[in-house]
Image 1 (cartoon, rainbow, N blue to C red):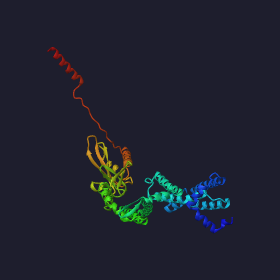
Image 2 (cartoon, rainbow, N blue to C red):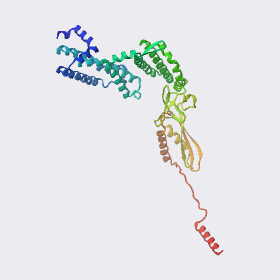
Image 3 (spheres, helix red, strand yellow):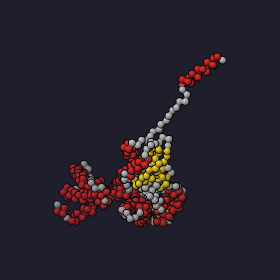
Image 4 (cartoon, rainbow, N blue to C red):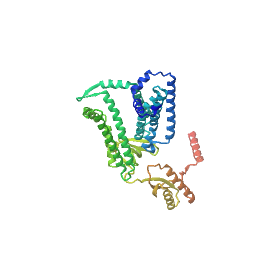
Length: 449
């Protein structure tokens, strides 16, 4: 009991608590069916489930929208508390039961891996939008990390790593082993996650800088992502022992790949920067390209998203904006001209009609100004055209036109203005009885002959 409050005893215990070899050796010699082992197992399960329920209850209302750091800490609460409480419980079990711990030690050893998994998931959710980084992908990455944990805990990972170190091939005067490649990929991924997190943070900061042009913000964001990604690879590879000169061997193959299979990707990437820098395409512009009309909702490194008023989204490659004619309805002015045909009967007061049309359109906040014109004296009535400048062409005009026509209909009813419908007169040139009499005379004449 006295050793429970001894600092040296705690120090020695914590030092051995995370030693995998000691855990494995005790697990091999341990009798899992002893009463003490079953009691320890129940305590470990209750400890894990109880703490998980308590922590998740306290932090379930904290989401990524509340801030990255706050959300990250809320996700680390459980593994940190498990590590602390589990260590205390394991030490107390050893002191009071007099036997080494197994299940409580497993809880403590598992906590750091849970911390790593949750940290990676938090940053990946921060970097990628929810529609790209799906729950399935998160579960797959978690499963891979848990497999690595099992391999490490069982000792199989050490055997596999020693075998991978022996599988080496000379490249460019250097020796590259399978172990070096695998660890290199792992640390490059970690470095890219950190780099993309920084880029995401800077991108959010740029999005709030209203003094900077929207296209320039997108260009700076893409440049920052590219620079940080390259720096992550350049800094990480030498640290893990991979000489960057080895990568020059693959330079020729990469050049050939860009010349053939990747030329479209490279062309779209460069075209994306061109259309952003010359500001020919901007967020919110209403474009028509190759028969597709829509509003620009997103500009990526490879394509531009055009969303139509019906909700469909077209992904147009960036290079299409360089080599084709693009109709930009909002290039120099965001207002767009729209028109509605109206027909009234002959005899209507055209000045009153035109005033009704203009007033009905200008009552709406979405319309900047309107005017009415006499377009044709048609066979059924007088054709007029109501034209107006629309302030938000990215939104649908179906509801707006319907409201305008309803107001015009009501005003026409008040002023007694008639909307004509087609009328036709049918004239019979010969009377049917006269035609029948002539036909009978002809028959009689034919019989006499």
